[in-house]
Length: 364
Ligand SMILES: [Zn+2]
Image (cartoon, rainbow, N blue to C red):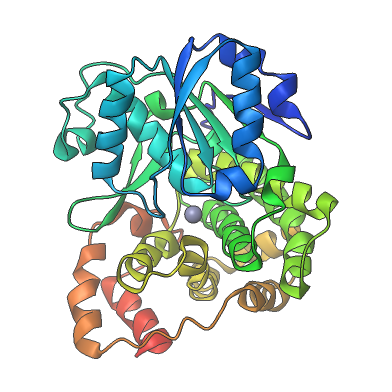
Protein backbone atom coordinates (compact mmCIF):
# COMPACT_ATOMS: atom_id res chain seq x y z
CA UNK A 1 0.00 0.00 0.00
CA UNK A 2 0.91 3.61 -0.43
CA UNK A 3 -0.87 6.14 1.74
CA UNK A 4 -0.09 9.70 2.79
CA UNK A 5 -2.48 12.55 3.56
CA UNK A 6 -1.24 15.16 6.04
CA UNK A 7 -4.17 17.61 5.88
CA UNK A 8 -6.07 18.21 9.13
CA UNK A 9 -9.68 17.77 8.00
CA UNK A 10 -12.81 18.96 9.81
CA UNK A 11 -16.29 18.33 8.45
CA UNK A 12 -19.78 18.80 9.84
CA UNK A 13 -22.10 21.66 10.70
CA UNK A 14 -20.30 24.65 12.15
CA UNK A 15 -16.87 23.05 11.76
CA UNK A 16 -15.23 26.33 10.70
CA UNK A 17 -16.20 28.26 13.82
CA UNK A 18 -15.63 25.23 16.08
CA UNK A 19 -12.09 24.75 14.82
CA UNK A 20 -11.09 28.33 13.94
CA UNK A 21 -8.04 27.82 16.14
CA UNK A 22 -6.54 25.70 13.39
CA UNK A 23 -6.27 28.89 11.31
CA UNK A 24 -4.56 30.85 14.07
CA UNK A 25 -1.53 28.59 13.76
CA UNK A 26 -1.06 29.55 10.11
CA UNK A 27 -0.38 33.27 10.53
CA UNK A 28 -1.90 36.67 11.20
CA UNK A 29 -2.62 37.81 7.63
CA UNK A 30 -4.25 35.78 4.92
CA UNK A 31 -5.33 36.03 1.29
CA UNK A 32 -8.80 34.60 0.70
CA UNK A 33 -9.05 33.09 -2.77
CA UNK A 34 -12.46 32.51 -4.28
CA UNK A 35 -14.60 33.00 -7.36
CA UNK A 36 -17.43 35.42 -8.07
CA UNK A 37 -20.44 35.22 -5.85
CA UNK A 38 -20.78 31.53 -4.93
CA UNK A 39 -18.70 31.82 -1.77
CA UNK A 40 -20.88 34.74 -0.60
CA UNK A 41 -24.23 33.12 -1.43
CA UNK A 42 -23.25 29.79 0.13
CA UNK A 43 -22.40 31.51 3.42
CA UNK A 44 -18.87 30.08 3.36
CA UNK A 45 -17.12 33.43 2.92
CA UNK A 46 -19.03 34.95 5.84
CA UNK A 47 -18.30 31.96 8.06
CA UNK A 48 -14.61 32.14 7.10
CA UNK A 49 -14.38 35.87 7.76
CA UNK A 50 -16.06 35.44 11.16
CA UNK A 51 -13.59 32.69 12.06
CA UNK A 52 -10.61 34.79 10.93
CA UNK A 53 -11.86 37.81 12.88
CA UNK A 54 -12.32 35.67 16.01
CA UNK A 55 -8.63 34.73 15.75
CA UNK A 56 -7.46 38.29 15.07
CA UNK A 57 -6.34 37.36 11.55
CA UNK A 58 -6.54 40.14 8.96
CA UNK A 59 -7.48 39.19 5.42
CA UNK A 60 -8.20 40.45 1.95
CA UNK A 61 -10.29 38.78 -0.76
CA UNK A 62 -9.21 37.91 -4.30
CA UNK A 63 -12.41 36.75 -6.01
CA UNK A 64 -11.44 36.63 -9.68
CA UNK A 65 -10.86 32.89 -9.98
CA UNK A 66 -12.85 31.49 -12.90
CA UNK A 67 -13.83 27.91 -13.72
CA UNK A 68 -10.77 26.00 -14.98
CA UNK A 69 -8.47 28.67 -13.56
CA UNK A 70 -5.54 29.92 -15.59
CA UNK A 71 -1.97 29.87 -14.34
CA UNK A 72 -1.82 33.58 -15.21
CA UNK A 73 -4.62 34.41 -12.74
CA UNK A 74 -2.73 32.47 -10.07
CA UNK A 75 0.44 34.44 -10.84
CA UNK A 76 -1.51 37.69 -10.44
CA UNK A 77 -3.10 36.62 -7.15
CA UNK A 78 0.18 35.17 -5.86
CA UNK A 79 2.01 38.46 -6.44
CA UNK A 80 -0.83 40.31 -4.72
CA UNK A 81 -0.58 37.97 -1.74
CA UNK A 82 3.19 38.56 -1.69
CA UNK A 83 2.84 42.38 -1.84
CA UNK A 84 0.22 42.34 0.92
CA UNK A 85 2.34 40.21 3.22
CA UNK A 86 -0.09 37.27 3.34
CA UNK A 87 1.21 34.55 5.65
CA UNK A 88 -1.21 31.92 4.42
CA UNK A 89 -3.73 31.30 1.65
CA UNK A 90 -7.36 30.41 2.30
CA UNK A 91 -9.18 28.94 -0.71
CA UNK A 92 -12.98 28.86 -0.63
CA UNK A 93 -15.06 27.12 -3.27
CA UNK A 94 -15.32 24.19 -5.53
CA UNK A 95 -12.34 22.66 -7.31
CA UNK A 96 -11.37 25.78 -9.24
CA UNK A 97 -10.70 28.14 -6.30
CA UNK A 98 -9.24 25.32 -4.18
CA UNK A 99 -6.80 24.25 -6.90
CA UNK A 100 -6.00 27.90 -7.64
CA UNK A 101 -5.33 28.54 -3.93
CA UNK A 102 -2.69 25.79 -3.96
CA UNK A 103 -0.93 27.39 -6.94
CA UNK A 104 -1.26 30.89 -5.48
CA UNK A 105 0.49 29.67 -2.34
CA UNK A 106 3.42 28.74 -4.60
CA UNK A 107 3.48 32.07 -6.45
CA UNK A 108 3.16 34.05 -3.22
CA UNK A 109 6.58 32.84 -2.08
CA UNK A 110 8.01 32.69 -5.60
CA UNK A 111 6.66 35.88 -7.19
CA UNK A 112 9.15 35.77 -10.06
CA UNK A 113 8.19 32.21 -11.05
CA UNK A 114 6.67 31.83 -14.53
CA UNK A 115 4.29 29.21 -15.91
CA UNK A 116 7.05 26.88 -17.13
CA UNK A 117 8.82 27.01 -13.77
CA UNK A 118 5.55 26.34 -12.01
CA UNK A 119 4.80 23.19 -14.01
CA UNK A 120 8.44 22.07 -13.70
CA UNK A 121 8.00 22.42 -9.91
CA UNK A 122 11.26 24.39 -9.87
CA UNK A 123 10.12 26.31 -6.82
CA UNK A 124 12.91 28.01 -4.92
CA UNK A 125 10.80 28.55 -1.79
CA UNK A 126 8.15 26.34 -0.22
CA UNK A 127 4.57 27.56 -0.73
CA UNK A 128 2.72 29.48 1.96
CA UNK A 129 0.56 27.32 4.25
CA UNK A 130 -2.79 26.53 2.64
CA UNK A 131 -6.26 26.35 4.22
CA UNK A 132 -9.21 25.10 2.18
CA UNK A 133 -12.98 25.40 2.58
CA UNK A 134 -15.08 23.25 0.24
CA UNK A 135 -18.42 24.52 -1.09
CA UNK A 136 -19.25 21.77 -3.59
CA UNK A 137 -19.56 18.00 -3.22
CA UNK A 138 -17.28 16.95 -6.02
CA UNK A 139 -13.65 17.86 -6.33
CA UNK A 140 -12.17 16.31 -3.19
CA UNK A 141 -9.37 18.87 -3.64
CA UNK A 142 -9.65 19.55 0.10
CA UNK A 143 -7.65 16.38 0.75
CA UNK A 144 -5.40 16.05 -2.30
CA UNK A 145 -1.95 17.23 -3.31
CA UNK A 146 -3.31 17.93 -6.80
CA UNK A 147 -3.98 21.18 -8.62
CA UNK A 148 -5.47 21.29 -12.11
CA UNK A 149 -4.85 24.54 -13.97
CA UNK A 150 -5.21 25.82 -17.52
CA UNK A 151 -1.99 26.92 -19.22
CA UNK A 152 -1.36 29.80 -21.63
CA UNK A 153 -2.19 27.49 -24.56
CA UNK A 154 -5.62 26.78 -23.00
CA UNK A 155 -4.72 23.22 -22.01
CA UNK A 156 -5.59 21.74 -18.63
CA UNK A 157 -2.75 20.01 -16.76
CA UNK A 158 -2.64 18.54 -13.28
CA UNK A 159 0.34 18.85 -11.00
CA UNK A 160 0.90 16.65 -7.97
CA UNK A 161 3.20 17.63 -5.15
CA UNK A 162 3.29 17.03 -1.41
CA UNK A 163 3.84 20.77 -0.90
CA UNK A 164 0.30 21.40 -2.23
CA UNK A 165 -1.54 19.71 0.62
CA UNK A 166 -3.70 21.97 2.75
CA UNK A 167 -2.52 22.41 6.31
CA UNK A 168 -6.18 22.37 7.26
CA UNK A 169 -9.43 21.82 5.35
CA UNK A 170 -13.03 22.42 6.34
CA UNK A 171 -16.20 20.98 4.85
CA UNK A 172 -19.57 22.14 6.15
CA UNK A 173 -22.08 20.61 3.74
CA UNK A 174 -24.57 23.43 4.46
CA UNK A 175 -22.36 25.47 2.12
CA UNK A 176 -23.38 23.15 -0.72
CA UNK A 177 -27.12 23.80 -0.26
CA UNK A 178 -27.16 26.77 -2.63
CA UNK A 179 -25.56 24.83 -5.51
CA UNK A 180 -27.97 24.86 -8.46
CA UNK A 181 -29.02 21.43 -9.77
CA UNK A 182 -26.59 21.34 -12.73
CA UNK A 183 -23.69 22.13 -10.38
CA UNK A 184 -24.81 19.46 -7.89
CA UNK A 185 -25.06 16.92 -10.71
CA UNK A 186 -21.80 17.81 -12.43
CA UNK A 187 -19.89 17.78 -9.14
CA UNK A 188 -21.73 14.63 -8.03
CA UNK A 189 -20.80 12.64 -11.12
CA UNK A 190 -17.24 13.88 -10.64
CA UNK A 191 -17.31 12.01 -7.30
CA UNK A 192 -18.38 8.85 -9.12
CA UNK A 193 -15.74 9.45 -11.78
CA UNK A 194 -13.01 9.88 -9.16
CA UNK A 195 -14.02 6.77 -7.23
CA UNK A 196 -14.58 4.59 -10.28
CA UNK A 197 -11.40 5.64 -12.07
CA UNK A 198 -9.48 5.16 -8.84
CA UNK A 199 -10.83 1.62 -8.46
CA UNK A 200 -9.76 0.81 -12.03
CA UNK A 201 -6.39 2.54 -11.73
CA UNK A 202 -3.25 0.42 -12.00
CA UNK A 203 -2.17 1.99 -8.70
CA UNK A 204 -5.29 0.92 -6.77
CA UNK A 205 -4.62 -0.83 -3.46
CA UNK A 206 -6.68 -1.97 -0.48
CA UNK A 207 -6.85 1.50 1.07
CA UNK A 208 -7.72 3.36 -2.13
CA UNK A 209 -10.37 0.75 -3.04
CA UNK A 210 -11.93 1.06 0.42
CA UNK A 211 -12.24 4.83 -0.07
CA UNK A 212 -13.52 4.42 -3.64
CA UNK A 213 -16.17 1.84 -2.84
CA UNK A 214 -17.47 3.77 0.17
CA UNK A 215 -17.54 7.00 -1.89
CA UNK A 216 -19.75 5.35 -4.50
CA UNK A 217 -22.05 3.68 -1.97
CA UNK A 218 -22.57 7.02 -0.22
CA UNK A 219 -23.08 8.98 -3.45
CA UNK A 220 -25.68 6.79 -5.16
CA UNK A 221 -28.74 7.82 -3.15
CA UNK A 222 -28.12 11.60 -3.01
CA UNK A 223 -27.33 11.64 -6.71
CA UNK A 224 -30.56 9.86 -7.56
CA UNK A 225 -32.32 12.49 -5.42
CA UNK A 226 -30.44 15.28 -7.22
CA UNK A 227 -31.69 13.98 -10.57
CA UNK A 228 -35.27 14.20 -9.28
CA UNK A 229 -34.91 17.65 -7.74
CA UNK A 230 -33.14 18.80 -4.63
CA UNK A 231 -31.44 16.39 -2.22
CA UNK A 232 -32.25 16.71 1.50
CA UNK A 233 -29.74 18.25 3.90
CA UNK A 234 -28.78 14.75 5.08
CA UNK A 235 -28.28 13.61 1.48
CA UNK A 236 -26.17 16.72 0.77
CA UNK A 237 -23.96 15.83 3.73
CA UNK A 238 -23.69 12.23 2.52
CA UNK A 239 -22.65 13.43 -0.95
CA UNK A 240 -20.09 15.79 0.55
CA UNK A 241 -18.59 12.97 2.61
CA UNK A 242 -18.48 10.88 -0.57
CA UNK A 243 -16.56 13.66 -2.34
CA UNK A 244 -13.91 13.61 0.39
CA UNK A 245 -13.56 9.83 0.11
CA UNK A 246 -13.30 10.16 -3.67
CA UNK A 247 -10.52 12.71 -3.17
CA UNK A 248 -8.68 10.36 -0.82
CA UNK A 249 -9.01 7.58 -3.40
CA UNK A 250 -7.55 9.54 -6.34
CA UNK A 251 -4.92 11.10 -4.11
CA UNK A 252 -3.31 7.66 -3.99
CA UNK A 253 -4.11 6.39 -7.47
CA UNK A 254 -4.64 9.34 -9.81
CA UNK A 255 -7.38 9.17 -12.43
CA UNK A 256 -7.83 7.18 -15.65
CA UNK A 257 -8.50 8.13 -19.26
CA UNK A 258 -11.99 9.66 -18.77
CA UNK A 259 -10.50 12.53 -16.78
CA UNK A 260 -7.89 13.43 -19.33
CA UNK A 261 -10.11 12.94 -22.37
CA UNK A 262 -12.72 14.97 -20.47
CA UNK A 263 -10.29 17.90 -20.31
CA UNK A 264 -10.61 18.11 -24.10
CA UNK A 265 -14.40 18.61 -23.85
CA UNK A 266 -13.94 21.30 -21.21
CA UNK A 267 -11.23 23.14 -23.15
CA UNK A 268 -13.02 23.05 -26.50
CA UNK A 269 -16.72 22.77 -25.70
CA UNK A 270 -16.89 24.41 -22.28
CA UNK A 271 -18.41 21.28 -20.72
CA UNK A 272 -18.35 21.41 -16.88
CA UNK A 273 -15.60 19.18 -15.52
CA UNK A 274 -17.76 16.46 -13.92
CA UNK A 275 -19.98 15.99 -16.94
CA UNK A 276 -16.93 16.04 -19.24
CA UNK A 277 -15.32 13.13 -17.37
CA UNK A 278 -18.39 11.09 -16.48
CA UNK A 279 -19.62 11.02 -20.07
CA UNK A 280 -16.71 8.64 -20.75
CA UNK A 281 -17.47 6.39 -17.79
CA UNK A 282 -19.65 3.89 -19.70
CA UNK A 283 -16.86 3.48 -22.28
CA UNK A 284 -14.27 3.00 -19.54
CA UNK A 285 -16.42 0.42 -17.75
CA UNK A 286 -16.74 -1.51 -21.03
CA UNK A 287 -12.99 -1.38 -21.54
CA UNK A 288 -11.97 -2.49 -18.06
CA UNK A 289 -14.54 -5.30 -17.97
CA UNK A 290 -13.20 -6.69 -21.23
CA UNK A 291 -9.64 -6.53 -19.84
CA UNK A 292 -10.35 -8.18 -16.46
CA UNK A 293 -13.93 -9.45 -16.02
CA UNK A 294 -13.30 -10.83 -12.52
CA UNK A 295 -11.93 -7.50 -11.23
CA UNK A 296 -14.92 -5.68 -12.75
CA UNK A 297 -17.35 -8.18 -11.21
CA UNK A 298 -15.78 -7.56 -7.79
CA UNK A 299 -16.33 -3.82 -8.30
CA UNK A 300 -20.09 -4.23 -8.90
CA UNK A 301 -20.33 -6.62 -5.96
CA UNK A 302 -18.63 -4.10 -3.69
CA UNK A 303 -20.67 -1.06 -4.77
CA UNK A 304 -23.90 -3.08 -4.55
CA UNK A 305 -25.14 -2.25 -8.04
CA UNK A 306 -25.08 -4.02 -11.39
CA UNK A 307 -23.15 -2.47 -14.28
CA UNK A 308 -26.46 -1.77 -15.99
CA UNK A 309 -27.93 0.02 -12.95
CA UNK A 310 -24.72 1.96 -12.30
CA UNK A 311 -24.32 3.13 -15.90
CA UNK A 312 -27.98 4.06 -16.00
CA UNK A 313 -27.62 6.26 -12.90
CA UNK A 314 -24.55 7.97 -14.35
CA UNK A 315 -26.36 8.62 -17.63
CA UNK A 316 -29.42 10.00 -15.81
CA UNK A 317 -27.17 12.69 -14.28
CA UNK A 318 -25.73 13.82 -17.63
CA UNK A 319 -27.24 16.51 -19.85
CA UNK A 320 -27.24 16.17 -23.63
CA UNK A 321 -23.88 17.75 -24.42
CA UNK A 322 -24.89 18.43 -28.04
CA UNK A 323 -21.33 17.93 -29.28
CA UNK A 324 -20.54 16.98 -32.85
CA UNK A 325 -16.93 16.35 -33.89
CA UNK A 326 -15.74 15.97 -37.46
CA UNK A 327 -13.40 13.03 -38.19
CA UNK A 328 -10.60 15.56 -38.87
CA UNK A 329 -11.00 17.06 -35.45
CA UNK A 330 -10.82 13.67 -33.77
CA UNK A 331 -7.69 12.77 -35.76
CA UNK A 332 -6.06 16.04 -34.74
CA UNK A 333 -6.94 15.52 -31.08
CA UNK A 334 -6.00 11.87 -30.54
CA UNK A 335 -2.16 12.23 -30.54
CA UNK A 336 -2.32 14.32 -27.35
CA UNK A 337 -3.12 11.13 -25.44
CA UNK A 338 -0.03 9.24 -26.61
CA UNK A 339 2.06 8.67 -23.46
CA UNK A 340 -0.60 10.27 -21.28
CA UNK A 341 -0.32 9.25 -17.63
CA UNK A 342 -4.08 8.91 -17.04
CA UNK A 343 -4.47 6.74 -20.13
CA UNK A 344 -1.60 4.48 -19.05
CA UNK A 345 -2.98 4.40 -15.52
CA UNK A 346 -6.20 2.72 -16.73
CA UNK A 347 -6.37 -0.97 -15.76
CA UNK A 348 -6.66 -2.09 -19.41
CA UNK A 349 -4.76 -1.68 -22.65
CA UNK A 350 -6.03 1.64 -24.00
CA UNK A 351 -4.63 2.51 -27.42
CA UNK A 352 -4.94 5.73 -29.39
CA UNK A 353 -7.17 3.75 -31.74
CA UNK A 354 -9.45 2.94 -28.79
CA UNK A 355 -9.77 6.62 -27.92
CA UNK A 356 -10.48 7.47 -31.55
CA UNK A 357 -13.22 4.80 -31.60
CA UNK A 358 -14.75 6.09 -28.37
CA UNK A 359 -14.78 9.72 -29.54
CA UNK A 360 -16.16 8.69 -32.94
CA UNK A 361 -18.93 6.54 -31.52
CA UNK A 362 -19.97 9.26 -29.08
CA UNK A 363 -19.57 12.48 -31.06
CA UNK A 364 -19.04 11.91 -34.81
ZN1 LIG B 1 -12.53 15.33 -11.36
